[in-house]
Length: 238
Image 1 (cartoon, rainbow, N blue to C red):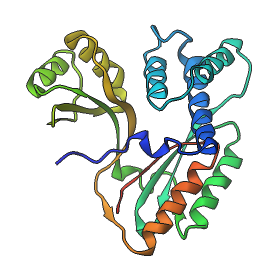
Image 2: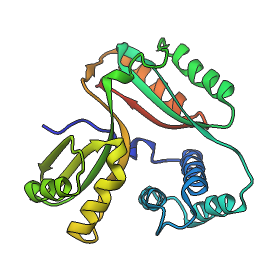
Image 3: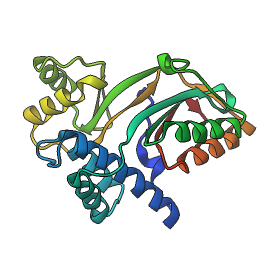
Image 4: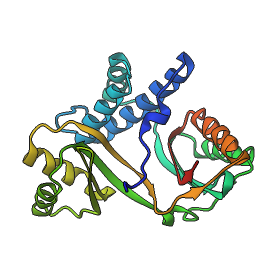
């Protein structure tokens, strides 16, 4: 049975307004990563991965280029990461990743999402201990032993490897993402990663049903409407 992790497919837009939100989120993240780690994707592996992911989510090239140009200019907003956590509908556990230039505003907006859906925002650490902060790399393949050997030879601290339906998924601590990706590329050539992300994986799932399912949908929609929210992770099983 595969470990439950969330693709960004939940954020892929179906309307023009929703698409604009997705483009804005990617633009902000690309700007921050380029400003912090360098403008060239060839030397900034995190930026290259982010651009690849943006293209898969059909973000136009001009949005990507504009974000990099903005970072090149040096001026602009000074965004900082923020993570909020708490209990959502049905007492499920929730982690909300943000990029903000105004922490007080962002906290107020996120707290409002919790309050208006009968949820409860928690103190730092209230649910984080029930999530693993993982790097996830998924690609076509079936020989998990060869993958494990390559990663071990590169001194990568592997958490888990799964081989299912012609796909291999590697789980590693978030701090090992760069080392793991480089090791895979060096040993197996030009890999096309179906998933290449760092995210919070729940250690256990919580079943929700009835009115809580509709409330959870409302909760996620409200959070996704917040400009500063980048990613939402939860352990709700509907």
